[in-house]
Image (cartoon, rainbow, N blue to C red; front, side):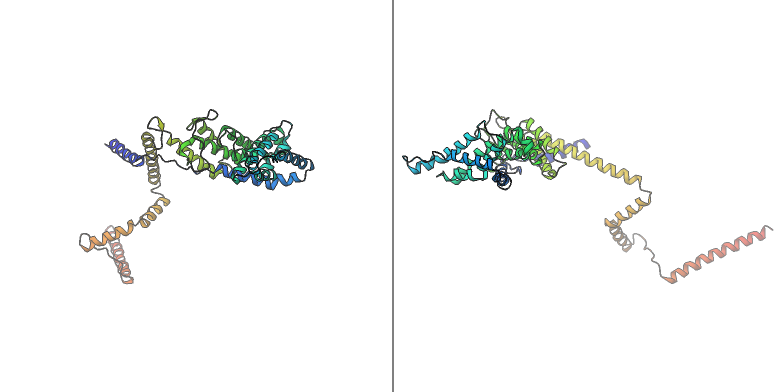
Length: 395
């Protein structure tokens, strides 16, 4: 009977939790990786790298030569000026990219050119050569900057000369991934994990968030800057891959002992929710968004067992301490604070009013105390007289 009642209760709670499946995309609270990466890249280059490069004559001369080479041949006197401006931005950006991939460049040159393209005069050159929107020219400069800073982060000199280059290159790559790459692709994850290995906890966090966004797939809000492309790519595993979930979980757990513990704990909860959404299948073999009935029943059973265990443990502890001073005070406190004492008093007064129980006698002050003393004195005198008479008889 008890097992039947428990099963029915679990089924009712499961049906209430399941309800109508909600298949709308959900935002998991992921940071907009693109916007955050772009702002961090431009801020770091503008405040740290470019002022230091301006004091180095060799790097300043290198940037001047690179700008001259990129701007050379931008305007042709024989062609229309508007047509030249329409195609000039891409030409300038491509010439910068050709300089970036040159094998003769070392780490300082690639770092200088990447920051110049991200937040320096090189980005202004591309914007000046464009007749399109400012966003299009900025996209072209960010693409070239991503290639330059990603290559700089992979240089062997980067770890010794500037460890922050690892996080800078990962942010630049996530800001504008090259064609065919994704913001949550394997290349981005690899760059961020390298930054985490260099000592930057934010790199580890971004790597885990990229894996979480790729694992959640369609459940991430498409309007956010954290959604991954839905198209299947041969370079990256599909959404819902268990390896991505396991890797993200390991990264987030490693951050629970750092300053990012709150954010990591929130991401672990979101990862668990994404795993629950992938438990069941929705029409045509596509995995969906409602929870599995078996999973809900198991969760309800575990929660119920935990509550029963806690209640039993509390009852055993209270019974063991019932005769101690702490137990007596605890009972008295609970009796008064819970309202049971007031309820018992009202019930007693009601029973006395209807004559069911006799009225309690209330002390009458000093007169009642004296009456009690006289009564006890008379009893004591009678006892003394009895003892004297008994002694006389025994003589």
